[in-house]
Length: 154
Image 1 (tube, rainbow, N blue to C red):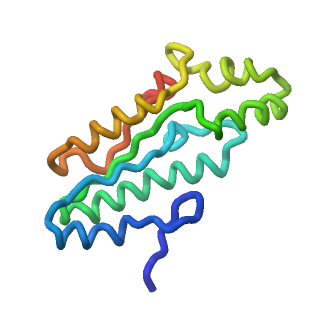
Image 2: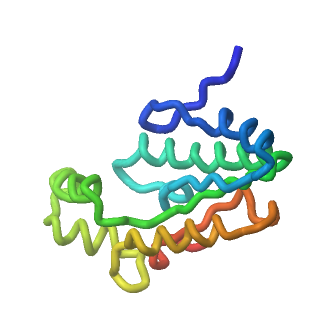
Image 3: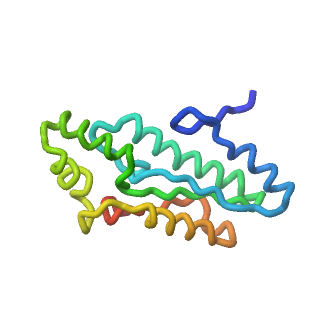
C-alpha cells in the first residue's frame, strides 16, 4: 500500500509524486518547506502546531535522502513570529488564556526572546528560501534554517 503523506492541514503532500518527474526530466530542483521556529522549539498553548512543525523537519529529511539520487534537494525555512492573520488571531486568544494584555502577549511572549523585539518579515523568509534555492549541489540538503531575529538559536 502506498504511503499517503499529508501536510498539517490534511492536504496531500506532492513530494513523492514530484521526485520521479524530476528524475525523468533530468533537471533536479529544490523543495523548500516553510516550517516555523516551532519546528525546533516548543511553546505553551501550541501542542498541535509544534507537533506538525517538528514533523515537517522529519519529512524534509526523508525527501532529501530520497530526492538526492534525482538531484532534488529539500530544506526547511523556520521563521519566527511573522505578523500574519494567524498570529493576529492568536494574540487575543493568548491574552485571554494567560490573563495579560495583547501588548504583553506581543512583547513579553512572542517577541521577548528576539534580539531586537521585531517580528520576522516575509522578506526575511523569502531571502532564506532563495538561499536554499540557489544551491547547485546536494551539499546543502536536508537542512533547516531558523529565521527568527534570534528568538531561537542553535
